[in-house]
Length: 333
Image (cartoon, rainbow, N blue to C red):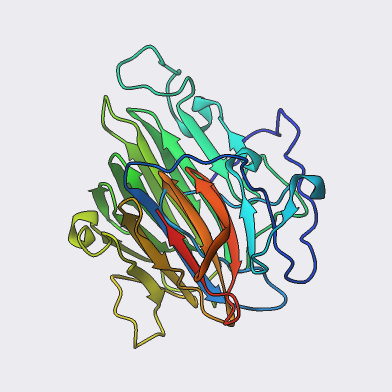
């Protein structure tokens, strides 16, 4: 999406992926449970030994990132979980002129950040580059973007990528070279098969309300596909995601899964908004891997039958998960 000047600050260091399935996590020393509902997103994909794959948890979308040093990580009793804390994500706040915006106006009503964009990168993107954080299996990009009022990304090209955008708050207006133009609100999904090539823009046209969305790029199973656009409105599945997993995205070759979004890859996306004290099993089966992202609130991730070694996740935190019959997992608000 971007071609900015060279990075003006050193990239976040990321240590190599540890071998085996030893769980390395950081456990906060104290945790105060949220008294508000939690929202989290989860992506799951087939396990491939040559790739790292992912799942997302939706409480507050959190970007995945590898730790800068092994001293930052601690071994836990969950052998199939690796915790990715928010503070280890690369944060980008690019010049507004790079994307066709006017000067920053943080003094205006509704602005919550000094810069027009604050983007948290889970993987290599734009000015951030690390040899240890290229992708996570078929997941190539996950960016958590906060766009200030009346700002956005001007028309730019994509190709050979499945692009899935989840709106956390605000309203996202999309327009593309296929003739599509629409505005989507909270809980909605915009998706594109870029294929042989497509151009589009993404804007927050509201004068007073920030926009937050999670954009994920997934490598398709084939290159040169026919470009396609689709969407799902959040209000259509609002009840389906309350205190349960809403299965919103699946493989377009999977005839058994009836989801509103279909893409050209073996990937699933689940979303849930949970009330405090409720728990759900994690939908990452044996032989698959997942990436869970906490978008809002806070949660705990633990063994399905034992809370003793629970991992606390708060807004923007993430976790890499390896499906295991021996260590089934649950999330609790």
